[in-house]
Image (cartoon, rainbow, N blue to C red):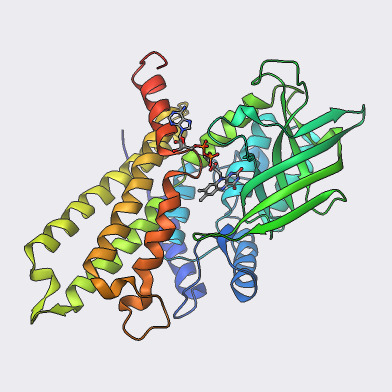
Length: 391
Ligand SMILES: Cc1cc2nc3c(=O)[nH]c(=O)nc-3n(C[C@H](O)[C@H](O)[C@H](O)COP(=O)(O)OP(=O)(O)OC[C@H]3O[C@@H](n4cnc5c(N)ncnc54)[C@H](O)[C@@H]3O)c2cc1C
């Protein structure tokens, strides 16, 4: 394995850092995750950044050259790593990094022609419509129905936990097209215009973020929006989940949080001594620093595999579960090291770092659930990595 960056990649890295320096507003406290931007100014800024990243041609960095990309998983890694580290929204996980590569792999030529340029320019916002009240870890249990009517499907059902659906233009969904077939066999993968009659998006208030329910009532989906073969949507889903789990965003954001915590330990005195002088705190920070490096290398290995044309499988789950739990360990350390006042929220004059780690603590709880829970990732590693028989 050779993880060193080429001269071209190093130049690109510099260009990304300059872009971030120019675009990141001073005292920005919004999210670096486009899909989690809150309504109003935060979303307007994030959407503007989506277009600016599109103007640079950076949404398609990892796509094959024939689709306008640069075939460079490494540049994509560099961009995502720095953008999330600096909390500048604009990297399009669900559109450019999940939907587009899936369309490149399984989509029809008209689908590629229609959607890829819009995603590349940052004009179209996508969300994922997989989970349902009765289908999460057991995703193949989806019960949303799509009835074949020849040139279109009639879709009825409900999706849940769709991140950012309230801002999205389109969603990719799984729907059951053959209720008689074994559950993994009767599913189809459809692209749905969220502005169509028969679609209702409802915001789902919760402690960590911006999730929605999506309801389909007698929705007409043209056959041309079927991706892959009818009843073969499970194969397409596998590709989407692989792209989703190989992301670096949680790891980059957690590294940034760790940097913030180290700064806090340098600047803060407790009982007349700087925090960094406390051996327990020093040890804790050093341990997290080791984990940050390990997490980054696990993510980088995936990029290296993609670049070398190797199939990524349980390696994505390894990176995902380690990265998610690392994010939680940093948040937990942050809450403990900032002390009792660390539990106060922003707006309170006594809240250290304006309550940053209190919010991160709640937010990080979801890390081991989204994109497949930690238990499911470990099941994948046991089965496909270790070769253990199913339990
Ligand atoms: C931050 C976040 C963002 C999300 N964004 C989206 C999105 O954009 N689109 C979307 O479609 N969904 C999204 N989800 C939903 C997410 O994919 C599901 O929550 C997840 O797959 C778990 O499903 P569930 O919530 O139904 O839990 P369940 O599947 O009911 O699991 C409950 C518990 O049982 C455990 N469990 C279940 N099966 C097994 C097993 N076989 N072995 C061991 N343990 C098991 C789980 O690990 C978990 O602890 C998001 C969730 C979160 C938290």
